[in-house]
Each structure stands twice: as structure tokens, then as C-alpha cells.
Amino acid sequence: MKYKKEKEFDPLDNMVLEPTDFSPNRLFFKDGVFGAWLYQADCIEFMDLISKYFPEGKFDMIFADPPYFLSNGGITCHAGKMVKVDKGEWDKSKGAEINHEFNLAWLSRCQKVLKPNGTIWVSGTHHVIFSVGFAMQQIGMKILNDIAWEKPNPPPNLCCRYFTHSTETIIWAAKDEKSKHTFNYKEMKKMNYGKQMKTVWTIPAPNSDEKEFGKHPTQKPVSLLERIILASTKEGDLIYDPFSGSSTTGIAAIKHRRKFVGTELETDYLNLSVKRLEKLFKTIKKGEFQQNLFGNSLEYR
Ligand SMILES: C[S@@+](CC[C@H](N)C(=O)[O-])C[C@H]1O[C@@H](n2cnc3c(N)ncnc32)[C@H](O)[C@@H]1O
Image 1: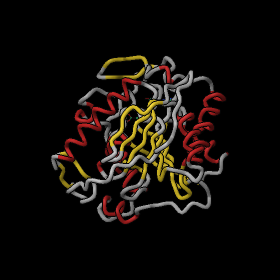
Image 2: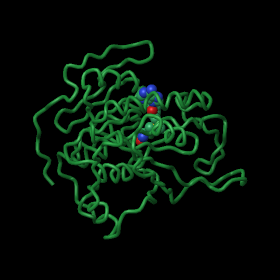
Image 3: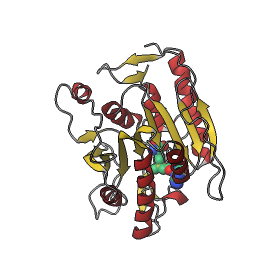
Image 4: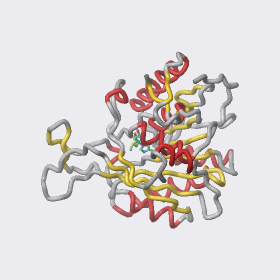
């Protein structure tokens, strides 16, 4: 697998970013050869700027893993111990109405920065996903599928008064009713041993390799993002993640020759992202990749 060196380019050339009270709004990291740009920026402010510079839309696909608003004093089981659910300030609920206003605000920006045939994927639990689905309908996105991501080894339910939470929902939607979205049907069928791919995906939580530089409290597995990217984008497409965290989306995008733009507010997560991305660039440059079983997903040796 040879990675062709491309001419360095900047998809957001000439865009002038300015700090605000809320966000530093600065380019944090860039690699023009593989195509990765990370901004320390509030995603809403960033997308307002993108739509000013690129009113026709800029991104082929968006994956968003927004705050789930579930860090509100509940308990969960981590490494066999009972711990408080506390992912960070950004994950605290502000009440159903304000949470929904926030979802409407960032989703309507996503709609503007998508190209006419672009699609968006949004992951969430029941704390957020109904609001996301409703907001999508309010702004006229076209919902294409809802995926049930099943985790084979979820933490046990400690109070024994509910079923064990073992799924997240991922909604896939097109910019609007007119969009002619990309769906790589044959590739998905091949990945599913010759049968049509269904909407229940069983994918384990991130493995230890994915956390070698530290972990993000809500880190997504790379293989989940790989499937999403392989299903809905083409090589060379530009993918945006408004809440990029540890840049799992970026890792999967670069592995499959797509380009990546991410926004994240927290410096620690941006540093973690840079370490993960740089390791991947080195691995690709050394040629340490092999095709996996399906011939389409690339794995570390
Ligand atoms: C659910 S996590 C995403 C995790 C990511 N998918 C991964 O695999 O690492 C959401 C992230 O959004 C960031 N965030 C919250 N509000 C934001 C905003 N307004 N703009 C940009 N990032 C934000 C948080 O700091 C957090 O890292």
C-alpha cells in the first residue's frame, strides 16, 4: 500500500480566525501531506466562519459525537469499581430546553457547512439522541438510517433496576431532501460477508492500542469510524468532526485516504489527538500497513 505524496494544500486557506471570550479559535496542528487540520475552537463559531468563507458548503461528511449531557451525579461501573459519571464540565446537562437549543444551534451550522450532497452522522444515548433527531427534522435534514451500535462487553448495571445499557444510536442524515448522498453499498455488503449490511453493528469498545497515549473519557472505537467513513465517503473527501476529542474520526479518515478537519476546545485532548495522528503518519510512511480480511479496511500490523 503506497501513500502518494500530495501537494500540500490548505482547504481553509485565507480564513482569518480570531479569539473570542469563549474560545481561542486557533489552528492547533496541521499536516498538509496527509490532510489533517485541528483547530482549538468552539465548533459553532468555527462553522459560522466556514459558512461565511464557503457559502456553498465545504465538507463531504460530518461525524459528530456531541456532549451527551449525562454527567449529572449518576453512577457507573469502571474497572470493577463504582464511580460517579463525570466526563467533564462540557458533559453536564443544562436542562432539556437549553440542551435542545444547543443541539439545534450546532446542527443547523453543520447543515450549512455540508456540501449539497453531504451527510452527517451523530452518535448519542437516550440523553441526547431524541433531541438530535427532532432538531434534524426541524431544520429539514433527511434522516437516512439509525444505527444501533451494540457494545459486546458493556459495564454491568450496578443498581440492578434497569437493563444493562449496551447500545448507542447513530443517526445518519443527508443535508436536505434534495441531497444525492453517497452510499458504498457494495463495499458494505462485501464487509458483511456478501449479505446486505444491517443497521445493528456489533463493535467492541476501543482497545488498549487505541489508548496508548492516554484516553478520552468518551473515546469511540476506530473501527466504528472506519465503517462509517467507508460507507458514506470517497477517497479524497473532506470530513469534519465538530467535537473531535481524541480525533478518532481523523485517525479513521487518514487510514482510508480521506482528509480531516476537527475542532476541539480542550488542550489535553488536542495534544492527545496530535500524538495519535503523528503515530499514524509515521506508520503509514514506514509502510507498516496491511489489508485486512475484507480487503478494504486497513489495520496496523
Ligand atoms: C463526546 S466527546 C468526543 C469524543 C471523540 N469522538 C473521541 O473519539 O475522542 C465531545 C468532545 O467535544 C468537546 N466539546 C464540547 N463542546 C464543544 C464545543 N462547543 N466546540 C468544540 N468542542 C467541544 C469536549 O471537550 C469533548 O472532548
